Structure formats: C-alpha cells, structure tokens
Amino acid sequence: MKSDVKADTTSDVLSVAGRGAPAEPPGAPGDGVTRDGETGGAAPRRRGLGARARGRLTRWLLVLVLAVLSVPFVFPTWWMATSSLKPMSEILRRVPTIWPQDPSLEAYGRVFTLQPFAQQYWNSLYIAVLVTIGTMLVAAMAGYAFARIRFPGANALFVLVLVGLLVPSEVTIVPLFRIVNSLGLINTHWPLIVIPVLGAPAVLAVFIMRQFFLGLPTELEEAGRIDGLGRWGVFWRIAVPLSRSALGAVAIFTFLKSWNLYLEPVVYLSSKENFTLPQALTQYVDAYGGPMWNVQLAATTLTVLPVLAVFLVAQKQFVQGLAHSGLKG
Amino acid sequence: MATASAAVRRDWLVGYTMVAPVVLGSLAFVVLPLGMVVWYSLHEWNVLANTFTFVGAENYQRMASDPGLADALAATVWFSIGLVVVNIALALLLAVLLNQKLPGTTTFRTFFFSPVVVSLVAWTIVWSFLLQADGGINGFLEQAGVQGPNWLRHPTTAMIAVIIVQVFKNVGLNMILFLAALQGVPEELQEAARLDGAGAWRRFRSITLPLISPTILLVSIITIVGSLEVFAQIDVLTGGGPGNSTTVLVYYLYQQAFRFNEFGYASALAVLLFVIVLVLTLLQWQSRKRWVFHEV
Image (cartoon, rainbow over all chains, first blue to last red):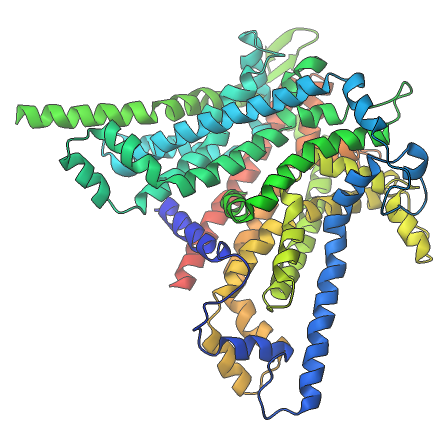
C-alpha cells in the first residue's frame, strides 16, 4: 500500500513539474487576473494608472531579485570554465576577472600529462554506460514482472527488494569492501559496475518501472497475447517500447549517479589508471601538495561541460528524471 | 486443467526469471552486507593486526563514551538543521518567484537547476577555490568593504561553507517539487481571498502555505535523509576539519574504517546510521500518506 501511495504522488508532481515553464493552460479561469493581480501586471481596471505603473515596477524588481539570486548558481560554473584558460597569476587576483585577459590552453595540455586523464575519462564513461544499460534492463524486467505477473511470493520478494531503498551506501561499504576483497576484485571496475546494477542503487529504478507499468493500460498487451505473443514477446515488443519515458528518466539519473560516484571508487580503486573522474579531479597537486588551480579547473571543465550541454538540450527530460530520483532522496 | 496449470506455471517461471537479477542482487549486495555489518559490529577487528575477536556489545558501549562520536553527532545535527532550513527557505522563495510568470522565468529556472547536473566533486572543488582566504568570494566582499573570514579554516564558517555549497548544488530539485505544488493550488481560492481584500502576503500565509505544507514536510524529510549521506563534499572541501568541526557521522564512519582500520567499531557506527535513516524514512512514508490524503 505504502508504495502505491508513493507512486501516485510521484507521477502527480512530475506531470505538473514536467509542464515546463509555469505556463498555465490558456483557458484557466481567473488565472491571469489572480496571479498578475498579486504583482499588479494586469491590474483590474478600477485601479488607477499609478497602481498599474507600481505593479510594473514590482515585476521588474522581482526579475532583478531573480537575476541577483542566479549569481551563486551560475558564477561558479562560469568561473571554472573561464579560469581554466587563465594563467595562475590571473586566477589568484583578488577580484575574479569575468573574462580571461590572455586565454591559453596550456592548462588543458597539462591535464593529460600529469595523469592518465584520457584513460580516466574513458573509465568513467564506459562504467556509466554499462551501469545505465544494465540498470535499465534489470529494472524494466523486474518492474514489469512485479506489476503484471502474479506468481507466488511476488509481494514478499518485492518487499525484500525495497529494503535497498533504506540502506545508504555508507552503511554497507565495509562488508561490501570485504566481499569485493575476498573475490580479489579490489582495484578493478567490477564492483563499480555489478553492485550498482544489481544492488541497492538499482532498487529505485525497479520501483519507478513497476509504478509505470501499474499505471499503463493493459489493452495493448492483451491484444498482443491474442495475436499469439508469449510473455517475453509482449514484454519486448509492446511493454518496453511503451515505457520509453520512464526508461529515459531511469537512464538519466542512473548515468549521472554513476558519473558522479565518489565514495565507492575511493574505497575500491588504488591506482591512477583505474581511477574514475571524480576521484581523479582531486589528484592534481604540485610537488609540494598544493593544488594546481588552472589544471584542476581545466579537468573539472572537461568533466562538467559535456553533461551540462546535454542538459541544456534535453532539459525537460533531465528535470523530470531527476525529480523522480529526488523524491526518493 | 493440466494444460492450464502448465501454462500458469510457465508464466510463474517467466516472472521468477525476470525478477531474479534484482532479487539475487539484493540478497548478495544489500541483505547479506546488512547481516555482516551487524555481525562485524559485535567484534573487535583490527585489519592491520589481523585480529577478529567477539566482544559482544562492547563497540556499542564504546559509542556511548566516545567524545569523537558525540562531536560527530553534534556536527551532523548542525549540518542537517542548517541545510534543511536554508534549503527549504531558498527553494520556496525561488519557486514562488518562478510562479509569478515574470519575463525570463524559463531561463532563471535553467540557471537554478543547472548545478544539479554538475558533478558534485567538480562543484565542490570550484567552491573550495572561491572560498580560500584570498579567493573570489572574499575578493567580492572586499569590494563591498567587508573583510571576509578564512572560510574553511574556522570551525563555524567551515560548517556554514559546507552547508551553502551543498544548498546551491541541490536546491534546484526541491524548487521543482515546490513549483509543482504551487501550481496545484486552486486559483478559485486565491481569487475568493483577493475579493475579500486579502493582500499578497496574507494570501500566501493563509492559503498557499497550508495547502503546500504537506509537500514542505515531505521535502524536508527527504532533504534530512539526503543530508546524512554527505561524504564527497566534506572530503573535498574540509576533510572533516578544521579540527573535527565538520566531521559528520558518515565521515567519522569512513575515517574509523578506512583510516584507522577499526572495522568493528565502524560497523557499529554503520548500524547507528542505518537505524537513524530507517526511522526518518518511515516518518517520510507516514507523511506521504498524509500528503495524498490532503490532495484527495
């Protein structure tokens, strides 16, 4: 029961959040009047011109407030990207320069010579891709079976799986480290691929897929069965293609989670050529242990910008997908 | 009959096959480790000395008298409270502002959400540079005539810095959840109150806030649970310091296990963390029920 309640609210929130910019359907009665009345933009006629002008002023003041509030969200990323093109002397200037005075790609060259950064980039990329594909597959199958197939013990097995939602990765890191160690898989990528696909991190994906299939009308699948498709045929040919939106959400938050994973690589990996990006980013220090700002910023820029670019293109999917995972926390 | 039964059994088999990966995975990587962590917590275990002795509840007794743990719990409480208060307040403010149909709303929403997709470690590294004594933040403050502190070197400001960095990273998610709730507030109520002469603030306090309060409660609990799992930020920004002022429970656990090789004691700490998260999550499910009831 609990879980059903959870899902309903999830999809509720998302259907609203997914609407994009808060643009109400045009026919919403009284909408413009009330909302705008609050700030006065379209003040009712009986108010004087003065009130209308004041309303306009309020609106622009609020836009100004939004602009000021944007600074701590946007400036760090901007500063990161531009400072990676600056020499150290310019980065260390008291007041940050908005644009590099003498842009140079020197730091980018050193990113690759100080560490096997290309290898580390590849590690992060291929691990995240495998984890994403594996999780989508495991979650679609389990979600479908838990939603559609009545087999003995289904509820008990589902509750067993849900335990994973209650376990932060820090709680099980010591025993998992022991297990991985006794299998001789320390300093390999196996634990970073297999545990997320089959263990606690996959549970949220299973849950989301199950809720999606529960809300999906069964008519098409029944038609498929009448046409002679078996369970697997219905699953692959009908259910999976219909679940693209839910699978997209799963793909986005799974990829980002793997791409950003920090604790597990720190615990499992020990040699630089096996490192993943988040771990590698912290390793750019000079001979005295001091950080090399411009080199480190160049490496972080290379890590951040591709994801940010994809986000800007597929913003709606990102917001929906991450709000799904955010609801779990 | 026999053929029908065979077909049903075949269907069961498909079901078991489909759930097998995640069920076996849960057994191997969730249930088994949970059992192991409880078992370990009853042992004195030093990896370097290669000793593993059953000590019963000794690790739990040690927890009660460990000043390091008391400090870590205090830091955790401060961090969680600070994070939730600032995060919820800012998320609500942003959501309300974005709900006014002002020009540029879509762009601002993108701005506020963008740190959510930025790699956590990258975000934290950039802020650690900006927060240096001679870094960008203090440069700006100096322009405004304020002498900024050495943020990451004083216990209080270090905690503030960790909270602020985390808030800007993730507040966009809560903002979206609040925005969805705000858009669910019926216009008719607002309109009726406006005709009764209620001002904007009064309407927000008496209509909007009560209607979205279940969402606020839910989001608060989610944020608290999330705040308990903060690791990378602490590790990159402060390393738990200065002193142990930002050593929260998970970081203390990590130190005990992988710095001091005290796996037994670290396991007892993991059990404590699990119990705290369990209680909070049950609260969350409870509040979810109320939330739905409210919407109906």
